[in-house]
Image (cartoon, rainbow, N blue to C red; front, side, top):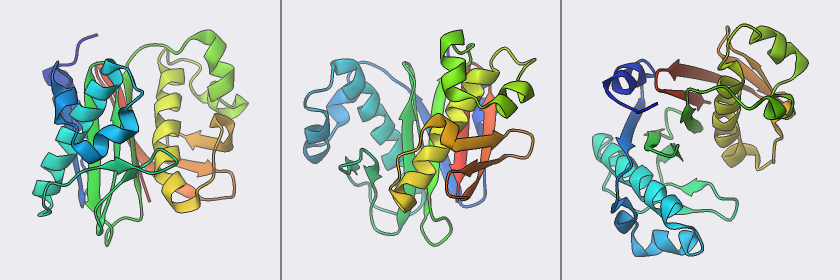
Length: 206
């Protein structure tokens, strides 16, 4: 399903005071927007990944300007998380055709996580890997429920990892979609929002 105006309208529904969000359709040449210090992390990546990563950073730099920060490089930590300028927290993600970013001031949020996937059912053989028995019951009547859980859990992981530096499996995150909250192994609770149109997008925040 192609992204379009429906995605923009739905994306606006993720709005949260203090958080700026953006998205961009990935196009040829976006890989050329990777700055020299950003390219090192993608030296072994295929062009498709470099292009999507460049697109996500185009969005991120635009959001920096919205928050009053100079547009700076976004490099990667050893664990793969984006490294933000002092005073900022944020997250990047992309599907095959859309790149997204979320940024906020560290004074307002401890961490953010964002993820995006096409609004399509999750392959049946992956559902057991993603969903706990309680979660499977909750999404039993939603054909895209498995994909929604996957996106939420990825966003939650991205929000938690910079704070705890703990690798989490999907079953280490229990999601309550109705409440907009997820509990991770160790007891931390993370709030989230999500939208669905041509794509499913989740924003997790602490």
